[in-house]
Length: 282
Image 1 (cartoon, rainbow, N blue to C red):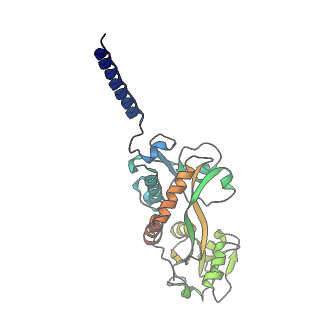
Image 2 (cartoon, helix red, strand yellow; image 1 turned 90 degrees about the horizontal axis):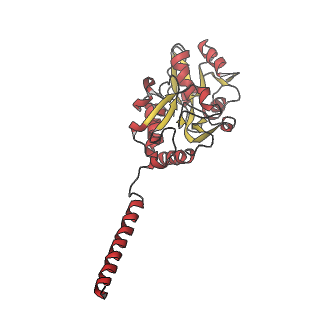
Image 3 (cartoon, rainbow, N blue to C red; image 1 turned 135 degrees about the vertical axis):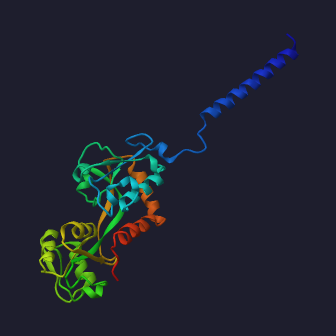
C-alpha cells in the first residue's frame, strides 16, 4: 500500500473519530433550558400536590374551590407553585382534616395550608415553611352594640373591651388601643364570644381567622370592626411539609421571593383586607 493511500485512510479515520466525539458530547450535554420542577421530588412526578381543609372556608379559599385560585391561601399556593416552576394546570389539590395533616407519618401532599400556626410542638412531627402570613389582631362586635359604628382606634378607647387572658389579643387592647377602662379578661375566646353575645362587653379582640369565623358563623349579627395596626401581631402561619422534606428549602426560597417582590403583601391586601372587608384601623 502506498504512503498516499495510507495517509488518506488515516485522515478519514481521524475525521470519523472527531465526528463521533462531537456526537457523543451533544447527546450527553445538558439541555439549554429546563423547567425548575424537573429537579424537585414531589408526591407525583411533574405535579405539585397541595393539601387544604375539608371544607376550606372563605376568605382563605373562596366557595370551597381551591382550584379557582381565589382566596388568600389558594392564591398563595399558586404563587408558590409558579416560583417552583409548576404551571397552574400541574397543581393538584387534596383534602385533609386539620389534625391529620400535622400527624406523624407519610403525607399525600407536597405541602398543606389551612392556617397552621407555627409552633415548636408541631414542628417535632412535620416541617414548617417560613411564615407566609402573620395574623392580625381584630376587633369584632355585634349589631346593636355601641361599638358597631366605630371606625378607628380612637372610637374604641371609651368602650368596654374584652379578650382571652394572657393572649396577644389582650395585650393588643392594653398596648395599642389603651382604653379608658380596664378590659375584661376571659378564660377563652369562647367565653369572650359569649360575653359579647350577652352584651357584657362592647367588643372583643381575637386574631383575624377567629374573627372571621365568629362573625360569619357563631355570632348573630356579628360585625368585624377592623384589624388593629401592625404593632399588634399574633401567630405566624406556615406551609406544612413532611418531616425532612427535600421541598422545604425550595419552598422557603419561593416564599422569600414572593415576600421580596411584594406578592404576599398584595395577596393579603386583596383577600384579607379588601375582599373580606377587614380594614386596618387607624
